[in-house]
Image (cartoon, rainbow, N blue to C red):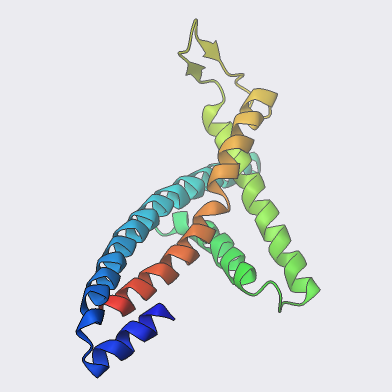
Length: 179
């Protein structure tokens, strides 16, 4: 609303609007910087979550005798599918049929669970050098490993997608203001 009023005043040649245009562009530049930084941070968080999801998948495949290593393009398959379903369903949650919402919920739960167990697999048997040192049980199913996994998965599973969608919208808006 304010932006339209400023643009109208500039078109009419009202010189009082010029400082407001500069302020709007300065604000757009700062918005652009902040949201690009947020995108970089959530890209790192998404990658970390993808790493833990793949650790879980590799461990589970190993249980069945498969030695598939999630490297190269294979690393991105499952995490990208999880994220695509989560973003699509989050953006359209009010218009989706219940069956699609249940599918999206199942994918979200699976994403969270694989992240939890992936973290547990990575931290199992590690020593935390605090105070006198604490060694986490070697079993990834131990309560300590799973507890750490839950905390980390809460941070890495859903926030990156939601922040990314919001930040991309803000970046588009800032670029539109600057352009």
